[in-house]
Length: 236
Image 1: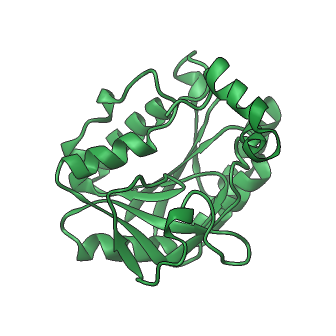
Image 2: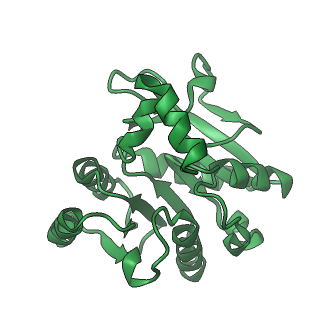
């Protein structure tokens, strides 16, 4: 029986997605992994179908559920919350530009068992050399293995406790936003839960590999902020 429901929202970026899925499948604990395909290209869709049985994940095509354009993170979170609650297990988001280690998920679950006040538990992100990178640069240099924080957790690799899932209904998420990392992090603290980051359970993160246009933030910031504010992309 699966100990955790793992979800990965996907918008193209098939190579990194398959890396993510294979790493999750190699976990030391039993998981139920669901990939949510959010209006990817037909090529990506076909590849996800092709590798589904080989790697061992379930696949949901958002286009079968709604005609709302991508991103559909709110719908994904709502569906995942419902599945996790019905199964009575925690929910883990692992995004499609993240690669976990075989013991990452086991370590997250152990922290959940050790902390009855847990709301969100995140793994710190690192680059290929093991150096802390975006979006957790704020914790670079921290020596403690586990840190409690009231700062926003990224959903790169973040576990939602069953207690938090029972307390806050994701149906209340703001329809006008695209991403909910900051809001849900604050909501967990507001409701009396503790959010922690595991510095001793790092995951490899290739920032924005799943959303290449966001690389413009570093190479062409003027164009990035034009897309963000004028086009209304990336609303948080």
